[in-house]
Image (cartoon, rainbow, N blue to C red; front, top):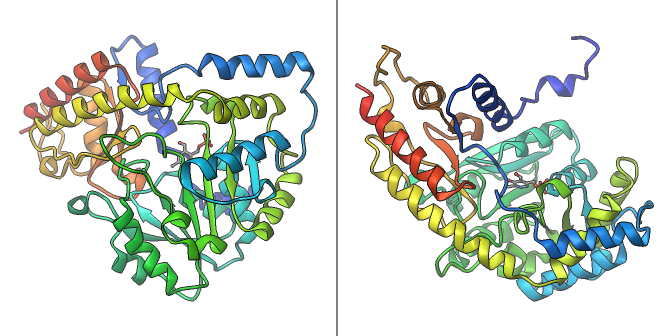
Length: 400
Ligand SMILES: Cc1ncc(COP(=O)(O)O)c(C=O)c1O
């Protein structure tokens, strides 16, 4: 339609939302569907956080806030970065947005000019390339491999850098692969970045608190302090405290960048919801037992689903270190036929046939830029995961 902006024609609708919608429709039509497509914890927001929001309403904290966030939250964010990541940020170097997603928009809107390139490792979170396109930049993809458990090799990062590179978006633990970088793996990437002083790093640490076993989370400015001046460290309460609907994300970085982001936000939303900001203060400053409990639950679910997937014929699933996703390969099933004679040519065919035959909704790897794979979100009960695992095994065994 000629009336719509040209930029919109380059953007795809979210595949994860499309799958969730299809699963809902099938469910409404009476089909027994297990949807493993959700990008959010299935737990409720902790009570202390809910109560902080209720108190905030009662106190009348219901007016516009400063654009970058209430001072109490910016102080809590600076304290969080110090306490958990060993990073020194002053409260004025922090900014609160309406979800991590808006932080990304603010940062890219504030910095990208036409032709500027943004490096994104694939498989990637579906929104990175689309946000880059909407804000006028060009996404450049750097591929990872299943053999490397979806971690970017330094030479692949090096090869993707050009004089036009403005940002490298780094995401560990990753949506969709769950891959998280150890100190040594991240240092190999920051060594490359040290050689290219024109490249800024946007690190999306959204899944920081969801890592399993004895894995230790690290973030770029911590691993290479010399990158502090060109790193925007982004995080949020959505995944860590089961607060996806509250829409609070935050970041800290060089003052000039944060001021520019404040300018964008001031003309866009005027700032995040006042009540949700007070809830986030409690999430960051209050007791942290919720994180320990959800970590434990997710780890058991990860182990269950990975084991069941690796017992399915034709599926290979590496064990991811974090987040609540697995990203198995279905390469072993490409070219096979379903019971009703359909040939599986792509991961999208696999995903559609699985949904039709067994009512299990997962998302095709083509949506995340690397396949043939599919993403399973294990933010679901162990009973549901066990049933889904059985159905996937049955479906894979039925392919000829
Ligand atoms: C990697 C990653 N970054 C950022 C976000 C956005 O989080 P928020 O809900 O805070 O906007 C998500 C949400 O799915 C995500 O998976």
